[in-house]
Every structure is written in structure tokens, then in C-alpha cells.
Amino acid sequence: MIIKHSRIELRKVIVIVQVLVSIQSLILVSEPYFNEPGYERSRGTSSGTASSREYDANIRQATTKWAMLEMLRNPPPCFRQVSPAECLLLIVLMTVILNSCIVMQLSS
Image 1 (cartoon, one colour):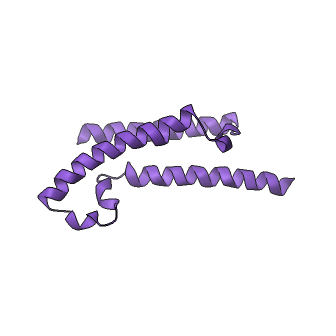
Image 2 (image 1 turned 120 degrees about the horizontal axis):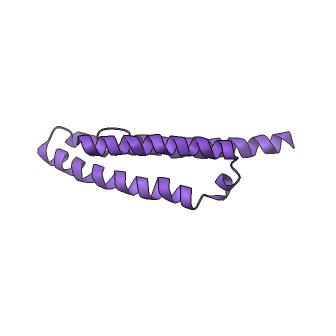
């Protein structure tokens, strides 16, 4: 019984880590466009800068909408089993991430 419970907890942690790593690489960097394979070659060019600005605005909005807000509105089954304390932690993390997005949008 303890092993089964541990696997469920580990699965929850892995999913949360995967979501946070995706958010980090797509939102919490100044130019996520250049994190995509092949695009780093256009860094420093005028076309790369223009493409980066457009991509960055779109990916931040889409990631916020679908990866964050949708997960909160319609959590997958493993998140439905999250305790109130874990839920509070997730809300705090999401709030910090959203605030970071707002700051980055205002500064660009």
C-alpha cells in the first residue's frame, strides 16, 4: 500500500515538474524563440529579432492560456487528487509565474 501511494505521489511530482520546466523554457526566459531547435542561428539578425518578438508574444499568451489556466480549470485526473496544501502551493507557483509574465510583457 505504501509503494502504491508513493508511485501516485511520484507521478504527481513528475507531472508538475514537466509543466514547470515547459513554462520555464517558454515563458521565464527573455527570448523563448531562440530555445526552439534551429532558431538559435538567427539570433542577432533583424529577421531573427522580428520573428522572436512575434513568436515570444504568441507563445507566452498560448502557454498562459492552455498550459496554466486550462490546467487550473480542468485538471487532469492526477491533479484532482491533490490535497488542499498542494493545491495552495500550485496556486502560489502559478501566481508567481503569471506575475513574471506580466513584468516581462511590460518591460518589452
